[in-house]
Length: 254
Image (tube, rainbow, N blue to C red; front, side, top):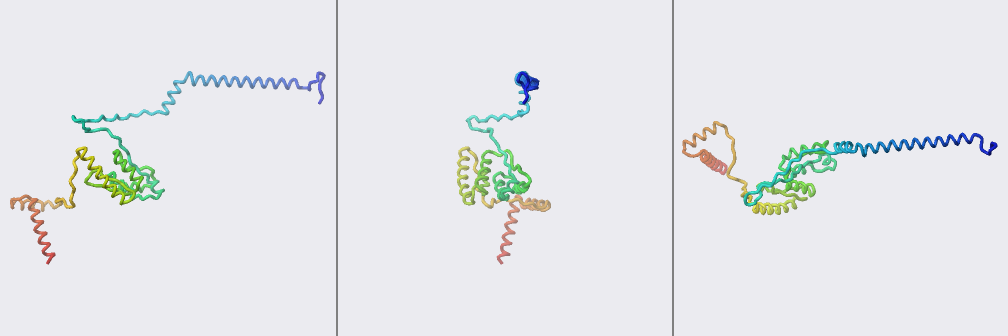
């Protein structure tokens, strides 16, 4: 390669100068960009810190009013008369019932027994397979909610004592539910005795009472006939029923 008199490559001086100028300009631009970024960060983090912090809190926090728990009420002997208690909401997911091919009739029957909600209402909600969330009952007490959880975990058999309100249990088989029912009844009776709760008397299949709807004209005639006999209409109707039932039995026997 030809060299000049001083041994340098022809044109090398200007090229090197251009390179130096380019590097210098890049350095200046880099420093300027850094200073601008630093100034912006200083403005955001120091100068406008409170403003941006308030904006972030406004986006992430929502204020809502929470009702205060009612204080426990005692009588003069220190016995609790009323107290606050947590409640639950029970819901079903018809879409999941459909997906996992679960028995919606058994689910509706069990929840109806536990929650006292109409069976057909729950079954209708369970049939809405396009929904992932259907509320069955709100404000469910803790003990009942726990029974619902056991029912979900253990299976679809529920045993209850209708005359003992709230006395019911669940089991994964009919036999286990029946066995658990005995334990539930003993615990219910023990709690009722301890709390002084009135225990209802066992109910016979035939209570001695039934309701009967009759025409107004017949009602009037019966009342007049009973008054004529000097007895109550209840006694008069009982007399007529017994007399006609006895005659009907004689005709049937003959």
